[in-house]
Image 1 (cartoon, one colour):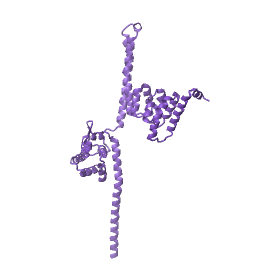
Image 2 (cartoon, helix red, strand yellow):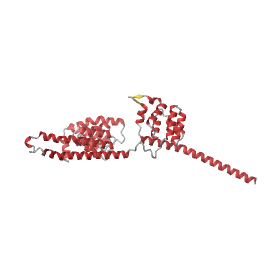
Image 3 (cartoon, one colour):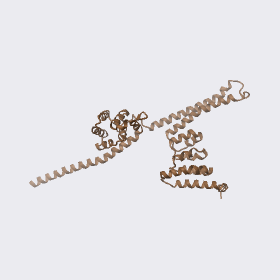
Image 4 (spheres, one colour):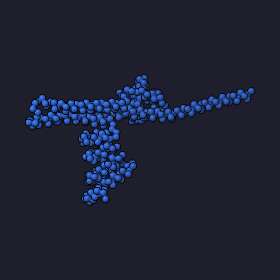
Length: 350
């Protein structure tokens, strides 16, 4: 029997039972490939009291097991990540259940040890990296301020004989702090540059479907007069798609599909607000001083709108291109049959 098993037997009977129940709960949860909302809620309700009543060794084992699980409830994940670093470290370094907001909050609230564990994750988003660098940069002045205080509080007998020696002892420390600040700032700017390279500027429309100035002006004009028929025709022409697609986009009474389309076409925000509010009256309503149309517009991401619009147009081409090709084939076949009949008639007359 191993030493760990002997130590297990030394524990009180009640504590051993809690440890067994905790590990059994974690193991059964791990076996759920696709847990339902009810199962996630039940696990969240059971885990915290069992964790609190268990031994530290059982806590470590449970957290280590859950760090590899992809379906840990958000409340449980934040609870585990906020535990002392001796327990939370594997979860902070490996768990896929912690989102960016949780990682930033934990790093800010729990301190440097938790932040160092987060840094060791295999992948970090630019937002998390920027937040970690900012926290590191914010801690530098506090560290630099401690040195003069320690010198001032030192006994007079221990201070150097000449006053000129004090600046010389503080000079390397201030220089080191300044160099560290410069390195952190350079790293921060580099991270921002990398993040900017990943995010395409809104002005860059190369290769994307874009509405011309004339098309934008026509859509604004038809929206002002609430001429839905003419607006649908102009929208279909802008998309190089069928009128059926344009009408289907406009039939979404929430305005979401038209807002997605206008954003994917790179339309100016103010003109898009005007079109949406004229065609969908409920988007004029104000919520906290902001219209519903603006709230809807700001909730949409440019790249996601572009992908959705391209998918709609691709499906439209598949639907109507086939019909057009079939129609052309039928016309060609009919013309060929007419030509053959004419030749046969000439042969019979001859």
